[in-house]
Amino acid sequence: MSNKEVNFGIDNALKILGVTGLNEGSSIGLTNFSSGEIIESFSPVDGLLVGKIKQTTKADYEKVMEAATSAFKTWRTMPAPQRGEIVRQFGNKLREKKEALGKLVSYEMGKSYQEGLGEVQEMIDICDFAVGLSRQLHGLTMHSERPGHRMYEQYHPLGVVGIISAFNFPVAVWAWNTALAWVCGDVCIWKPSEKTPMCGVACQNIAAEVFAENNLPEGISCLINGDYKVGEFMSKDTRIPLISATGSTKMGKLVAQEVAARLGKSLLELGGNNAIIVTPDADIKMTVIGAVFGAVGTAGQRCTSTRRLIIHESIYDKIKTAVVDAYKQLRIGNPLDENNHVGPLIDKDAVKMYQNALEKVVEEGGNLVVEGGVLSGKGYESGCYVKPAIAEAKPNFMIVQHETFAPVLYLLKYSGTVENAIDIQNEVTQGLSSAIMTNNLREAERFLSVQGSDCGIANVNIGTSGAEIGGAFGGEKDTGGGRESGSDAWKVYMRRQTNTINYTTELPLAQGIKFNL
Image (cartoon, rainbow, N blue to C red; front, side, top):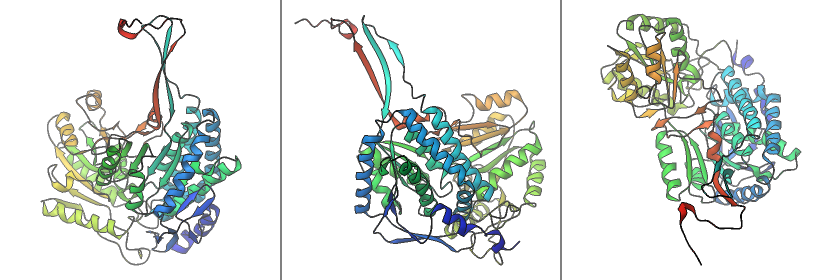
């Protein structure tokens, strides 16, 4: 199948999503404007131009903030179930445009078309979750120590929520934040990655349609574009009480410092160095599927990608052989061709990072059991396609201790009990996702216990990648400690207030204090 045949439909998808020509870098609902420099987005699939967008200037940003703060005054007064109805309509729009948006995600970012569709499905799922949540934004009622008094807690919207998202999930992470923030009564300003700006334009267009159809203020959904300098506008802005940032640990630390300096709130979803522990009681077939998808899915560019496979010495050779054999079956190529397993890295800088990782693991004494390399020739003209690699390494290698955002899997050997494997897993600075493959109940429970995995996500007999929206998503340590998506993650988008009501004619003080006049 030729690239021309595979790519058929991209132009149509762009038209459906309203992503054509020179797009403005700032937008408020259906009003688009910007006066900054032009950013060009090139697809890692074929190296062709996806679209152009103007960077947001400080003056543009101020216009967006004025619209957002004004819209908040209206949006916060709408009952939460009515806000949920708007989110329901947004979810339905996504259903109508799922194929087009999934195709754009695949083409601009480089992940497989199936993963692109899956990302849009995540958006739909979080909308469904948020609709139900809109009738459950509950507080607590408690007994007062004073007679004739009632106490309770309630939650109010924060205001303007700033969202900074990464290229690897160019639409889903925005939706995780936005759907919940909207039902909570917040308005949102979003800075997507400068590597995938067209996905941001497409999502903004879809949201704008819904708000326009309901005669709601444009500023409920706002878009700004640019590099880290534009992100700094939000991080330093006291008018934005919460910044939700997804990306590298380095980026997150900078955001956290800026936001903390003004006593704002930050929700951080940062790096991951995720491991699967494989014990002697593991199901080998399940282990191979989980490890291979975790390592090569999205070309290893997921924050939950499997970086380390920690294998017991008694089954090490057997697991290594099975995984290496599975890698021989991988098909690398255009991600819009559903026959392929692995697409390109996001850009040539990512390719260099991948190459550096392979060089360093060898320098430290590692052994490449599946050699990598950059692919060239027909179908690989963009220069962003690489071979997924496997390296035998030791846990203390510096390169193993760091996150490599590419399809490089490190095989590590452990001996003794599962406690030794858990120690190896936990010794890295990141703490996002983890997994254990075992049919031993005691090993599984130990892994999930207080002495087990120190990650925000700990799975048994599934891989590290592929979280459902129903559970809170996030991690510890250098991963930032944030929680998005399901469970009670909605609380971060609201401010909590404690209320005490006295319905008597007396004014008794707490703790029995006497104050007579």
